[in-house]
Length: 139
Image (cartoon, rainbow, N blue to C red; front, side, top):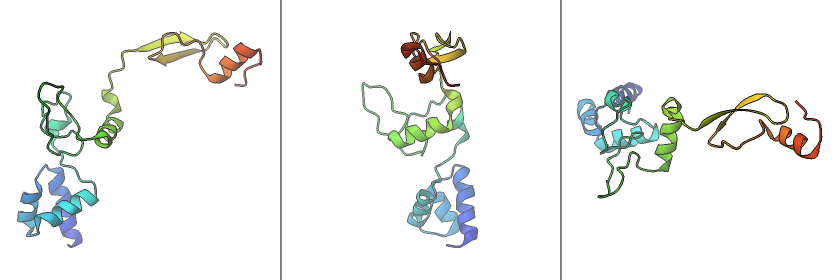
């Protein structure tokens, strides 16, 4: 496979074309295109999948693989944990963090945000140790 063909595969894959369509247009075997895409981590890109209201529950949000949905259970969005972690790492702006508490440190008085723990008292471990054992905090 030439460098030009590799570039075309990447462009076509990012446009959302399937392995078969890419292989037919370039005159390559489907398995060659598929293995190149997998080795170079070229998931199918579809602009409609990248929107906030993703209604496509038939394919993995990260890699585009077809999902097997279990009847009478919550629909899957990812094929495995690796895809789930990769997608959320790349889309941190979509996290819906409702449990953010604004607090002030019991030792130094500095304001801090606590996520998911409304009983937290200290901004850091150093302040906890200083307040608990009477040592001056090193900040």
